[in-house]
Length: 246
Image (cartoon, rainbow, N blue to C red; front, side, top):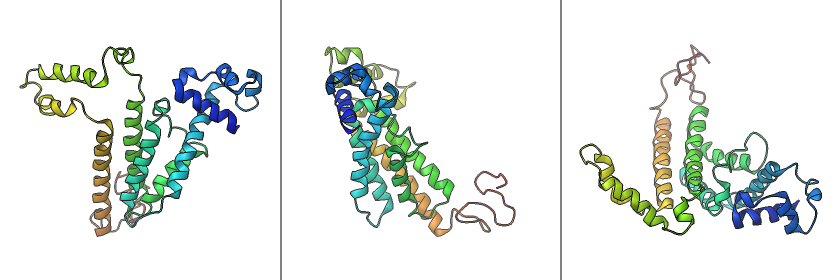
């Protein structure tokens, strides 16, 4: 299985998902297609296992990293580690944290990120929402980077900077009274760095999380008579955030 998955990842790294066929994999391994079915049930199963195989290395890196005394700084470091690892492999797209219904490295990464939130004074609902926001920032940015480049870029007619510059030039030509925001950010958009954009989005999310945690520690987020862990009113059994009965 190790040899099968290593060869599958090599094919994916070389030419993306279209290159991963059972026939190509068998040829890479010097065996027949029938023997591959001893290990996987088909291409979808093979792709899922290849993703899990890659994420195993990310899990090992994350688990080897010691915690600091700042859980939010640790969350940032883990999210950046994950982002950097998967952006080297565009074929992962946004699927690398999609398989969390069963035990595997996707679920393990989800758990490791969530464990940092256990160090903050938040309710279970707040922790769930916080993790969803952090994962969303990572996944959405990686998915964008994993999209097929425009045909003009693939064919070499233009490079990425020139392609984005065309968008920027179109924006500059717009009526500034109708599109004041686009005029305001067009110079930043033109030639922007994708990793810098990801880090800015992540820091905005984590800044909000830090504020929420600090409010919880001071009691500002908890109404009198509300259970600090569940967010449920101790007398009425009503959820403080949704207004529904617990």
